[in-house]
Image 1 (cartoon, rainbow, N blue to C red):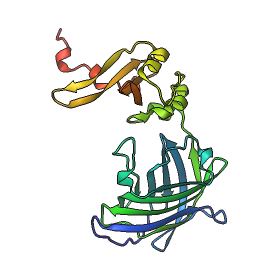
Image 2: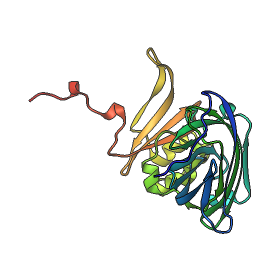
Image 3: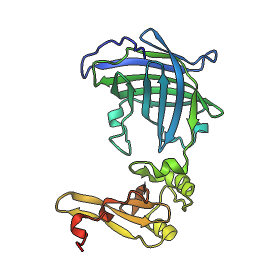
Length: 262
């Protein structure tokens, strides 16, 4: 597999890049530091207010991930959509570990600033024009990435939900939970809403801990198709977590001391 020549950058150097992924004359080509790349496959995924674009080329894999689109629930809402983040580090993200990032096979970088315009036709993302500033994490990042792309959009389904990792903001509960044949909850749901929909919780926890400080309160249900955990702050549900029955929560796992020797 041929690899493009990339220009080394200094570690922690702020590098401004203009990335354009667009449908132009129905050609699926990208250009990386002057080298034309063939797009073998491209997908756009949308989950919990985050957009990801994965591109397979003859050079290797390219990814734009965790682009925040807080008010987007469905790909159809991307028509003429624009997102601007002057400082990603100050962005009020639900999970601080999920900052936007840009990567190639040669390296990766956190995105510091982002200005993106997106458009959609049917189930395909036709154009993504992104002007971003990155913080280089390795000395092998491309100067620029520009060219043409058609990305197939991947709608969220129950399988993806059951394999999701980490908490999901409660504003998605009304849309996501019914995918698992569960009652939906409003974006301003309280603990009373959860109890009214699911009954008394099977487990609960949180509060002051001598080892870990104050832990947000939580309640959890063991349901026929999953474990469902709600985090609660001042009686308001802030997020929920879906866990597969094959991967039970840690506090339900038996330790060696729990196993009696026959």
